[in-house]
Length: 185
Image 1 (tube, rainbow, N blue to C red):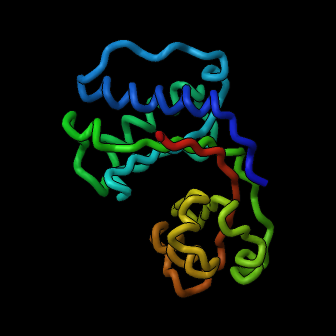
Image 2 (tube, one colour):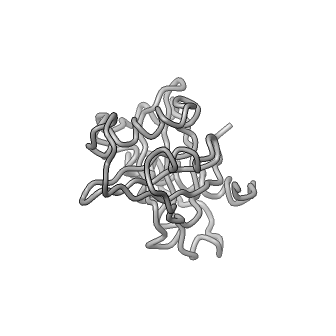
Image 3 (cartoon, rainbow, N blue to C red):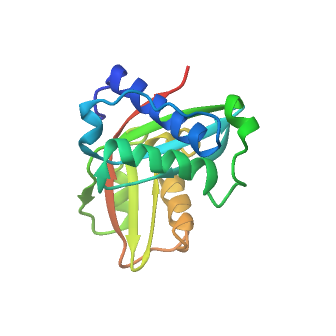
């Protein structure tokens, strides 16, 4: 079940993400006010879009640092280190929209084959994290908007992890998570 939204926390995380990117690009100096919730451990993904098209997306799947630190690191990463895009320029800052997703802790899924895994997925609700040996990849629940059919969703995620999308993977492991997400208006 998706986590309930928290509008105030969302606004704080969005402001912190935008500030971190602006600071990295040399466009802003004063940080947004702190909030005690930012000291709790949290895992976030920061997605940047320009004219509706993906411009960068970097995140964490497990809460390994404070929420405030995690969103800053992932915002700067999405703007400057996503290998699919060149680093964002200062001139782009006012032309992008930011989305922050706060992930629930991943829960491992028990399954005996990929058909059973597909049956257990909740399109539009579950983010999916796949593991096979040293390979892993994740799709946020938002990816269901582009890949609404569970079999295609799983095949694309396997491909992202460097696995054959059309063949069963014997040592495949999976975990699901939900997100609370906020977008800039």
